Image 1: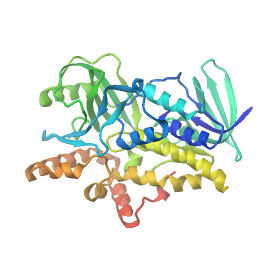
Image 2: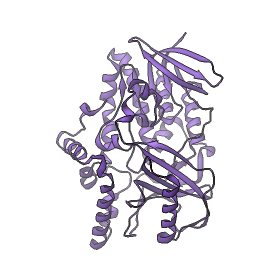
Image 3: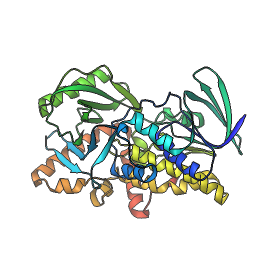
Image 4: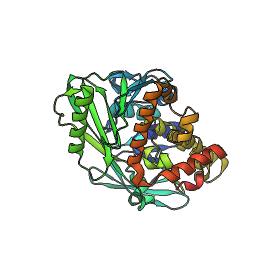
Length: 404
């Protein structure tokens, strides 16, 4: 049985960031990916300025193949039932529109880690001094490898997380986030912006933007609802209220399961013993649903934590939870109403855009936001959010006791 220093599950941006740190430190690192690379990745592709800076600083300039058209995004526009738009430019300037199939593969290759694609995780056995990983290749062959550490960088439906916390997925609410693509007849929405709707009748998460000559219409809602009906409702609304005329959706629609809760209420899951979780497998997600910057930074922290654990001769979970607190603070601040009101947690200036409106329009927008937030009332996050918000103000941080 082959032994290596670290096995990373999932060839994601989080994996690339972790692998870069580990390989640079001289640790033998292997990435397992269940699909054939380069693989398709469901994502809007709009990267935040912070994520873009990370890519440039750690991997270099993005190749043209790693970008969709339009290649850049200027900012975010919020829309409300009152039909008052709020365009907000990113603080750091325009950011790239990533083609995840190629951007992730490019970053993985730049990390210089060994990659085994078409290889799925079957199970983990943490034996204290090593973790034995069982995997299955598409050929049907079962392989076993041992590693000092394992990192789960395999997204919101993480197989690594299921292996160490099999009951976790049953304990939290899940949402379905899907997007369809349309040829455009007429679309007044500015293609330089990512458009997001705070509208309770449209769903928990509704967005649209241009991509490669087509228009994405995306909807997010509690699992169990009908995707096609939700999507048709949104497209009809866009045509009626915004003049967006689209041809019927093309057949290449896509969707995935997501959980918005952990970042909102500081209920992250970072792993157990010698198994670390990072990226969206932990629950990291920015407020507008952008998870790439969280994935890159938390992935790098996971890799650094392993290096520091070895250097300090300390348990890796202790080191990881100390180091990851900065990313928790940055991400959860984006959902914290007190930080939104009195700070600048986002990479676009919402308070400034709000104050630029007339007093009457501000009242309309704030009422619409409140009605939208009531959509989440059934999940009983309100008290937890309030508690976390107060702890952040009083202690300057979020409590690690809430993490798994």
